[in-house]
Image (cartoon, rainbow, N blue to C red; front, side):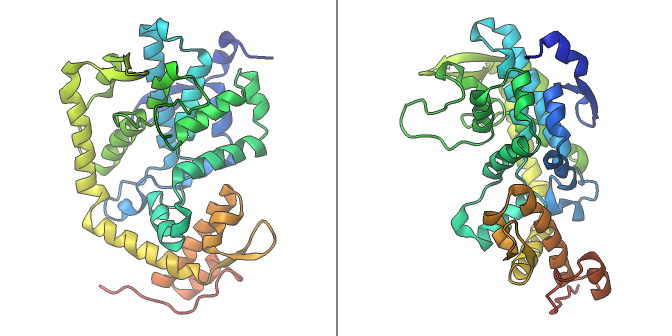
Length: 354
């Protein structure tokens, strides 16, 4: 039986967030959060190796996903309140929140560093974390029997398709509407979590603010005003989220914040050197580290990317990363404690010197 809004609001959960304060999430979002696949995001640093240079930048993908879920709900509810003619349903709101919550499920160890490794180890795969997020989302629903929970809150197969399209989709050719989750009149819903038209979306708002807080870098844009002065307007054959012209300076500040973060932290000279060191270690370990895959055969690290489910991929990849660190600077006895045979086949140590 489908839950009525009055009933499910009794089961909402409140989280204390470092950026947004007390945020309250839908019970279905809490069900997703409580799965092992989502909980693994607690151990994936949002800024990868940046914390070697900026010691406080140890925040993780878990808190970022909660923040994006919250902001997605704030924006879509504001549009629903101001423009009832848009016919934004409760199912639309919940789907947008779930897309924000699950958009980074597919990140590997050290976030974007893993993508650098895969692009060099298996360039033919064209691996991106957004596509892995969709696979992880499917796996999460299947292994935790959440389809019934989705149905309980009124979400059907079309809604699940809609959530995955918001997480990742490759644009079609021509002017045809190729999305299956929602009709063309609701095109604006696809611009909330990841906006491919303007680049102004809730994912960026959260990571700009969260990264700047933990990096100790000041940013000045105000997403509350962007939400306040956003409206959905027809643009050509589709509807698009537009912002009042008087907010142009605020939008400029948002993109300037992105530039400052890239210049100061993401592309910091030492951070890039450390990234390259880790990728080199993984590529070296890739030739030696083996594990038993889901099919019972030993597979090398990079084969994790094509043979087993997404959770297994990253579980073994994180272990392989520890083994790769041994190649750089771990003592052999500590390495043997962390990674017992058959996970320690490498004997040629390469030490880092000043």
